[in-house]
Image 1 (cartoon, rainbow, N blue to C red):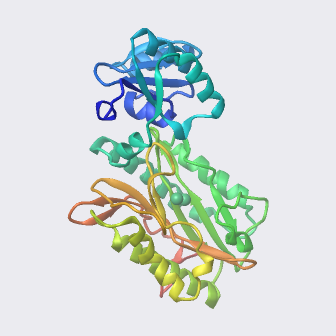
Image 2: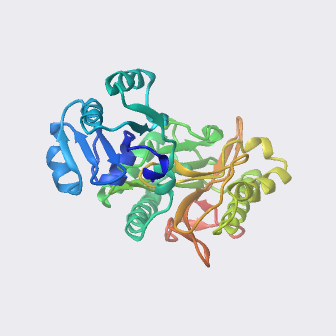
Image 3: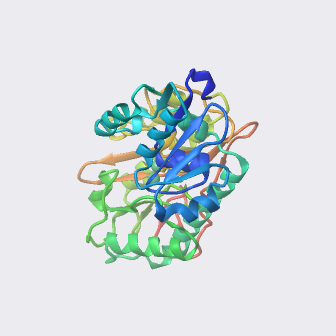
Length: 356
Ligand code: ZN
Ligand code: ZN
């Protein structure tokens, strides 16, 4: 990878990429990855023991200024050209990097490590599956507690707490609970609004486990849903099924998005579904590949992605359904987030809509 660039090394500064290549999770670490030989990892003293334990295959430099320490190493080792991660570099830091590098030429590297990361090995898939199991189990466990009068924020806290009890490191992102009209806002932050009879409630959440991020959304009805609520739910569920069926090794990411989006547009709701259909998950909650209109690229074996169509009706509410699936040779895709049917809820006759 580095040799093909015609560079002597890559300076890796994006935290998840450093973790991927070394095993070290640190908020202050950088890796100088030479074309040949061991990587040189720099981090500060807070992470020194963790680095010795988790990143044993690297040369370790303990320095508060990790990037500066590695920049000095470039010159010391006689490197002439080093690539850097331009997508993860401020203008300030770049100026400093170029200044301190002196005679070393600094060139952009692109998102090549992100591309490597999109394909998971068996151990990674196991960790992601564990994150997804915790996620689905937590929702199943707390469903009986959801009732009218409960605030969005309380529901989010109960769910986060249950995920922690089940072994999550932390929530993979800020849990979204969007009730009633708030459901029209795809990334609504939970408020003190109490759930009311007649609401649809969208819950988008996930556990982080051993660094891997799960992502799941369910929309539930509080009380018997109105006709329009059932119609929108069934449409989104159909769109999700179409998107999932389009997942396959070799499928184009734009075509997968279109499989779901075309159904929603044909039902007259095209303008009410404005985000992409899904995204990769792994050491980051949103990572390559992106499934969306105007996106290009082919899916490959062992790539986990979300499929999460939604319909958002301003002033009324919304529906989103999201699962994590692993694109798998031969079978199309394997779901990692599936909700065991909880005994205390009623599954309506015509759809999977959970009615409390
Ligand atoms: Zn989500
Ligand atoms: Zn998502």
